[in-house]
Length: 79
Image (tube, rainbow, N blue to C red; front, side, top):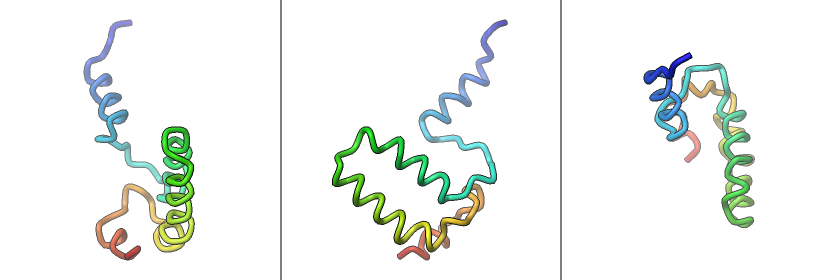
């Protein structure tokens, strides 16, 4: 079975953060996953700060929104 260059491009875009398949993943679920990935590469105090902001501000305000439906107005609601 040969390589498919198109699939390789999509995978690379996903890895680089440029492409996200539309799913029903909520912002809350995404942020929890993102924070766990970042946990191993950021300082402890940075993790604590991110976790606090996500837990106390982002999730209560807009955490229920599906990631693919998130827009600028939702983000501004956090501020």
